[in-house]
Image 1 (cartoon, rainbow, N blue to C red):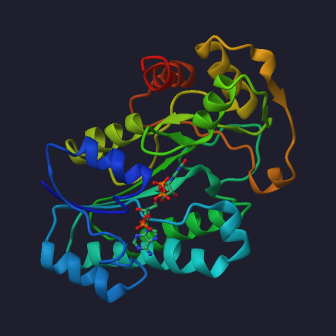
Image 2 (image 1 turned 45 degrees about the horizontal axis):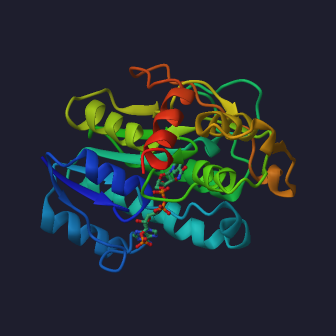
Length: 275
Ligand SMILES: NC(=O)c1ccc[n+]([C@@H]2O[C@H](COP(=O)([O-])OP(=O)(O)OC[C@H]3O[C@@H](n4cnc5c(N)ncnc54)[C@H](OP(=O)(O)O)[C@@H]3O)[C@@H](O)[C@H]2O)c1
């Protein structure tokens, strides 16, 4: 199949491109197609005539979007709507990558059909992007794939910061905020397996490593895996915690990914203990 992938230079985009290696990929860079430009998006869809479109392009900096909500409205919402409309106009199946932050602070995990209640600008833009897609799709196949706290060798993320700090023998302060620590390679492979190499009903899906955990628990798991002292991981509340609610996703629709500890250990060993 010919796949049109937006956001290919990002962490999720790189993992998707890797997982899609057996397909033909068209991945216009941001400099060639700004997704906020409806004409440019329509043009590339018209020219390329792909079999499937994936939108993995967005601004994900939570703090930057609090300071500049218009940026999120332009790229995360208008950009997603432009892609969704072009896909529908050409009757092409599409997938939007979305986030657990469409939900707000809760002790209970959220299933796919739970009512959205975002608590920060980033989450609001992702919720509005989903709504914009759903508002314009008709009979054309569509999917929203939500995930949370992704990590990958393509980018330095929280788990890498923990590992790098502990390997220097320094303490690491971690918050009690909860989420789904998820291996981005497994996330991307699940998208390809369930929506591109096979067909699934249109709708919203949660793709996460199993079970929620706090940043503190995740950091301690990294310490245990590295053989570092767990006492180096210190619990701490951060002032920005209100912008980063505890949200745990439940996958009730797709085959489950591995428990978060298992995938995290595999990643840490491969990245930091085999070199
Ligand atoms: N990271 C996570 O933990 C996480 C968790 C759940 C969901 N997600 C979702 O996954 C998706 C990708 O996130 P990521 O972590 O891969 O982010 P990322 O590494 O920051 O990548 C973002 C991508 O978006 C592209 N982009 C930004 N503005 C654009 C524009 N105006 N036009 C075209 N492309 C543009 C970037 O291209 P340039 O580099 O050229 O600017 C880059 O390829 C997002 O929808 C995000 O909400 C991420």
